[in-house]
Image (cartoon, rainbow, N blue to C red):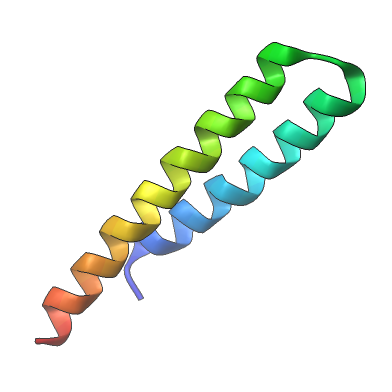
Length: 57
């Protein structure tokens, strides 16, 4: 498994936590940062998947 997949998954989890905390305390900026982290993590996870697929061929 590529390191990008691991890091991407961690960013998604971090983003979900930020979104939850932002909603709980009413902090729209923190919630937006969490959404951005989630998207960044999903992209990085996808890049890692592509690297794995290339390495397997």
